Length: 214
Image 1 (cartoon, rainbow, N blue to C red):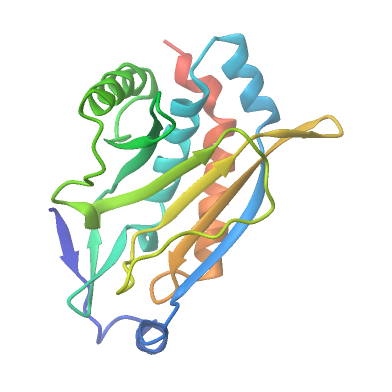
Image 2 (cartoon, rainbow, N blue to C red):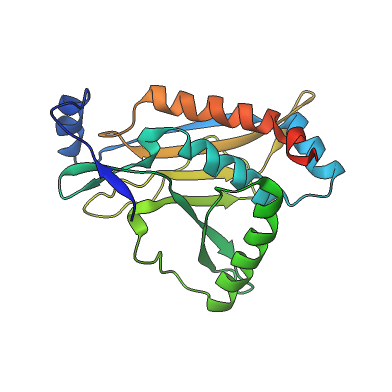
């Protein structure tokens, strides 16, 4: 695992880290309706896979915020150069398996890679996050329904992996909105970092047309 150790003597959130690390429930979460109107038009016009296209944007947006790449290990903070996504894949028997994926590549290349990775994950049908679980974003989707909030299962003791979930998109007037939820360890992540994630996500969705230029 490629990470660096954060010097707590130079860390400006040292007191916040100490406080939230001692809470019984140290997480902070938010649900935001993301405007995907223009992005969805491109996805439909070009016949692109909705889930993997949105996963690509979400994973790269999360990686662009360094606090989302930080984890707690043995009471200290480590920061990865990049993180991967482990997402749920529905199986025919209405259960699911996990698929681990890297989005650090051009979008078009990512699509074929993601399709292959998911096919392999379904064949193996496992719930193992692998040996490098610290380096993962935990991602789920609920394509069957829209929602205004969600409660996530969490381990004991608490882990520090961000959890990202989105639901079914819906119309509000002439705009298409998609509920997206974040759950992060508050010892590492504050509201401003949530805002940075959504700002980066909106920017990346707006840049999608440039992904197809020769």
